[in-house]
Image 1: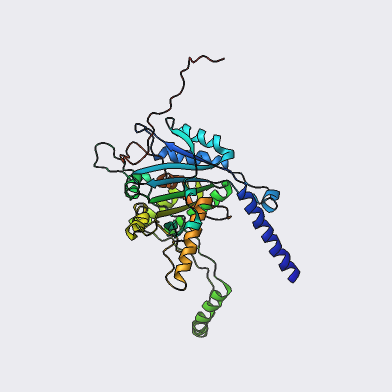
Image 2: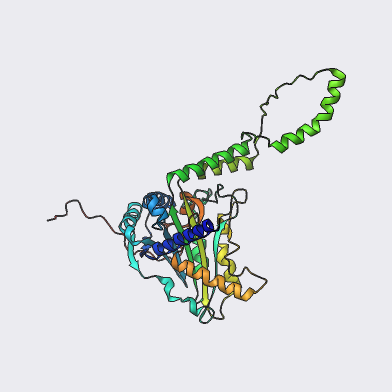
Length: 403
């Protein structure tokens, strides 16, 4: 028994070390994407692009999974907010760079893509609390992952005569770029495409939840103890009935169909679940970080760092919240200062490493939800802080001579 336990621990350790080696060998390319202001694309283009980028997924075979430390590919969609400036950056595996550029140009033909350096490396964790202060947190879903957040089709003003779509990024950009020199906000959305089998299982979970809300889910069979409890309650009455009225005729209970009327909340829940579970879904992880020079961290900035996510909340469906075990202002007791420092260091390094290598890590988001949380600037986004392409890239003429 002890030998089996030792072998099992050795095996788990070996797999973890192989995964670390695999992740450490991944090369990343940083692509800054700018869109000209006259671009007509909407977040729907981004939704389609996420579905196309699902093509980087490859399920591991047994050797890759148990011996090579293989992990399914992921990528990062990021925004860097500086005083009066916002940049859209995609961090992609270098091996898939050409595929990503093709997917971007496929939906945004006028996009300008250029390779840049990793903007986060200007901050070393050893300088934390010496040269700069940091607040950060991961962001997760407050409710069951089968329920959706508010998505971009709902950001529409029916009273507006023109430009009915209200870009949720407008408030985010204006809020997080209105900062002092030396301050920064970072937003990170890690996305890992999943295999069709897991997507089907997620869809079936959604159908089961809809059936439960509709009252059509089959009743779970009674356990042995449930039947024993019912028999104990009914035995005295059945015994008395047999003594006074004669033998008891055993009849099968017939389930009666009950007409059920749904309130608007139930209908909204079922509609939201069906919409999310019918789309392509991905595992995703969200991080937000605020950095300020030492002694200049302001509490209102921490509030606005997470306040930008509240516009996506629908409390009868789902909402976003700071993940309790990662937010750096979370521990309030027992070695509070040391625990907060450890969290600050961890959230910074995880952001810089684009850490998403644990199997089962992240939460389920649909392509529509991802496109709501992160999409390239649309023409409705009037914020002057967004870096725009001066001119879109055009296709060459058909009669262009070539050798």
